[in-house]
Image (cartoon, rainbow, N blue to C red; front, top):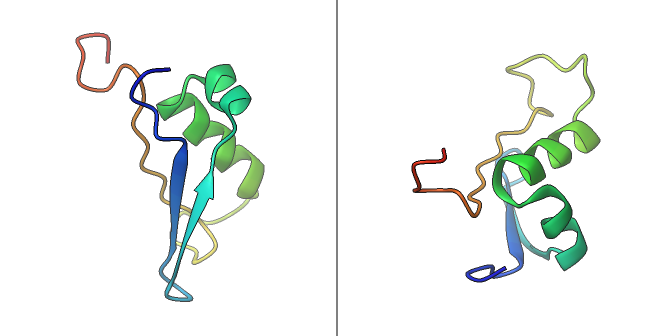
Length: 72
């Protein structure tokens, strides 16, 4: 995918930490980046019974190949 940097930044506001992670090309292509990848991360890492305002909940901001186009 053109324009893909292949990195993700995780910011933990509770602990005050920042970590850079590399994304595999397979994962990005499978979920098309952006919305699909963000959804996969959320489903994998957040329990379905987590309260919306609980500290262990996540706020995920992702861009993908359709960001800024009329397809979104």
